[in-house]
Length: 210
Ligand code: B1M
Image (cartoon, rainbow, N blue to C red; front, side, top):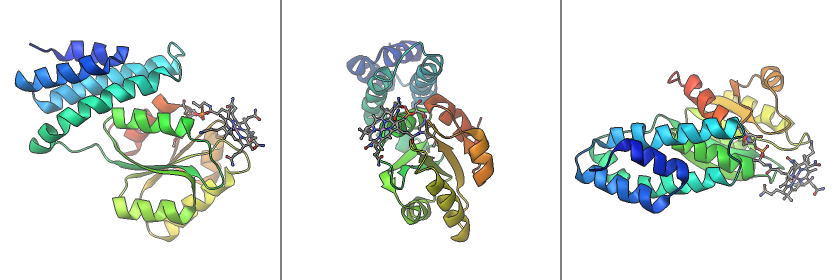
């Protein structure tokens, strides 16, 4: 009999095979897909997020846990669809125009997925128009932008303005090494997070699911 606590522990260890096997076993045992997702997988990723934030674990360990989570989601997806379980909300995520850095952005995407969001990753060097188009197409609740260069940060302002001008109601969230809360306030972004785990907390706050 698979229990969700062991699933969580295997996820934290990044043991992909065990995570997949325990997810399959939990389904066979009749554990509801929502319980497997929330109490097994998302709670495990939350712990990864907390440890990452506290510098107890480092950059390589997050993708390892995320890979295990993706494996389990592949198994769980049909059961979740059957049970009518929806993601918390859709986040369009990209690195801002002129900026090619994507390591931090990818970590943010992994943690958001692990936190129950549907993430539409629009890549790097993303123009304001591309953010607007993706948010419209995906009916995104949040438009999330990453910048690693002081020279590319100003393009975040353009996205905030372009979304408003296009009448898109998605909340805006920004982050990246040179970005600060005061910069978010200055450009009228709805949220800022300093790291990937903080991005999940902020995204939940923005959709009032904290
Ligand atoms: Co670049 N680079 N780089 N670089 N690079 C920096 C950022 C730099 C600080 C290095 C330095 O000079 N000390 C400097 C920027 C200076 C500045 O503007 N203040 C710099 C520069 C100048 C450049 C070039 C201009 C160099 C050149 O060609 N002359 C050039 C620019 C290219 C371009 O983008 N147009 C360039 C190129 C590159 C590489 C391609 C070689 C490579 C990127 C590879 C890739 O990403 N695929 C690279 C790298 C690796 C770095 C450093 C070394 C590492 C960045 C990184 O991945 N950190 C970086 C120096 C440094 O940071 N020590 C540097 C690890 C990552 C996990 O952290 O991205 O901060 P980070 O993400 C964190 C948080 O910031 C936050 O969460 C993440 C996880 O906790 N976060 C968010 C990020 N996005 C978020 C979004 C959110 C919320 C939180 O909400 C939406």
